[in-house]
Length: 399
Image (tube, rainbow, N blue to C red; front, side):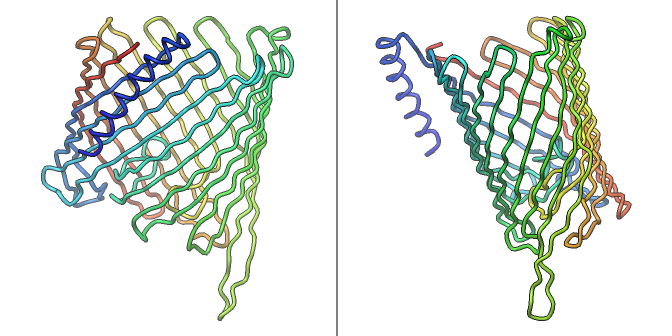
């Protein structure tokens, strides 16, 4: 009820501000409330190996999107509340919430600043399955993040950008490790079209620091350097890639009697990414390959992650679109003296679906997700089939 009152207040404020902005400056707002009802059949809600538990899950989503565009600024505010209800396992019922704000401001003709801030409270075991390959218990995770990016055109061909970000993750269970993360990235882009047609070169230097609370492994530091290029091969085909190296420093403590000795472990590896996109009027398909070293949410170790992905969408008619996504993800724990070194798993996700536009404001989605996680260290398989029916209504005001 408080959430509905809040959105009503936001809608009234948006109306007033829209009238004032339009009359005074000629600029306006777009206010888009939306609601969706989703029904999921999940044949393994706990991702168990043998004793699988199935259930019918109902999800009611409601939220608002607010967009403001002026001559120098673009501002977006998005919030969403999800009420998750299980037909048989009521102890898993939960309310998830997310809010995100993005602002882009043009300082000068060749300089701009982009700011992002967000908060997410989520509880689903498969919250990161498609992006990292990991599954969790139904614990609540609260994530706060903030980032700022400055982009500058040095010349007509050369540009640079500086990005800083911060993220905090807190769990309601001692099974997981709370953490904070800071990231700094400096990149350069060069338009090499005069040398090779439709080609952009890129160089990035990155530093990341991950700190873990109440863990023998205190923090990880990651230094990355990689270079790459993006090339428009034909009007329909685009290729982008990068290749580089990283170096990690893990700080941990070893208890000896009543004394804790602080130690550091160093390692290095190869990182890279390859993306091939084919795009026509009706078909958009992207094949991706990547390898990197990354922290694991809720854990105090790093993983060497290798991913192969396919994302395809096909416009069948003006109102019907089909899509297919697939991921193959390999995770291997980056072994050091503070870790157990027992994470060695691969994950397969297959996601076909349809989206049907019933009207300008009403949409129907049908999807199916097959997921398999193979724990090679313990020779265990986890499989899950998820079928989803979703109907969504959204309408834009003041557009």
